[in-house]
Length: 111
Image (cartoon, rainbow, N blue to C red):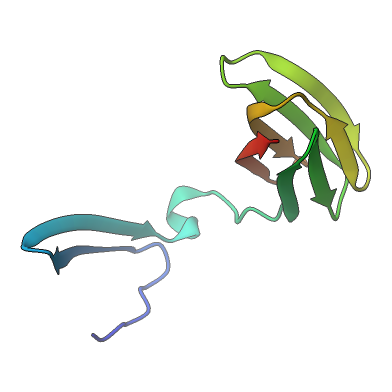
């Protein structure tokens, strides 16, 4: 396989054929250079993970964290300036972080 870096603003696409177990699957992949979309790279660096009774959020920069239950209700919203443990009951949650320059959403299971 040979790769050539696309020109600025160009779109790269490919069809990938995956074979195994007597089955064949095709996947279409399309990569668009950020100059073509006008969107900048996501610079939000964070780790989000569930623990027993808490959601742990580790951020480098101040960020707004919102926690949603899987039925869509917001169950927590707070501005973080560092690391935080957010107390939660056992269950599955969506955690959204936003620092103004980037956004990250993760699915988290709390034991």
